[in-house]
Length: 391
Image (cartoon, rainbow, N blue to C red; front, top):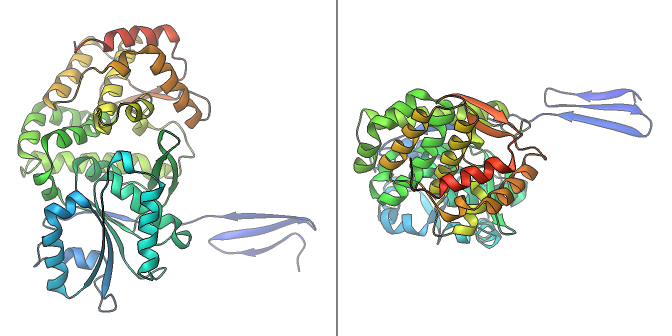
């Protein structure tokens, strides 16, 4: 045996530096696909079945379905499986941000155990909104230290946000997503037809994440939203010209930011825009504020900070406000006008960002910079501005 080094492969290396010390250096490949597939549950369409493992060896699917989705699509889902002769083993769960806790994740784990899920070859599929997809991913990461799973998002927030990343989580300790892990799906399958049955407020809520991405990263996306947000809301993203480009740009923009930094080794992340103050305040406001609504308020607060710093013009801030109005997003909330609560929320976020503010800020619409020197007097000033209903 070599006392200096032994065992080296493409996946990892074991180094022995002295008789009582070893060092392991390893890496793990992450390979998952995000695919747009309209008409996912049409019985004549095998694309869903093939994407979820359509070989003859696969005779059943283990599926977790949001209770509200099951009420809308349960008959269609079961008809699809019956048509293709696949045994559906479904767990239907009542899901909300308030119930996104360990008990719900353990219900999924118990379902996997009861079905005797094989570690690699039984498809686990989550069909629902972002909360359900986070729970399914979290449970899949826990069970047998990780089993594969597939995401099928059914609401606006999930299609261009929760479905495309690798983070999973449950709420705990009074905080949003305080317990979590990184567990990539095998696939995320996006079908905007699901948006036809999403109520208007939740469509608007999902557009808060579009606003975030557009302001911090994508001027073209912002321009599309500036001109078409009301139409997208009215048509539930069913038009065949603007909606496909908006969704494609949003998904690509998210993946472009996530792919080089999946495990968040770099803590300065542009996609954290809108998530500096919102996470704590959102949890305290539930169910009064939805996630995307809180993100949008955080975006507006940050834009007003950027205006004070000379990073945005007054006209640019007014344009953001106009888009928020078109999206029917709130422009004020008492928590975002409370400077003490804003300070507390920022302090909590700083712990998540290893002690620094690392605040993503727009430097002109579509560009990003970071600052870590936001002062108390600035927070107090923008808090006063946030008590207004808009510009």
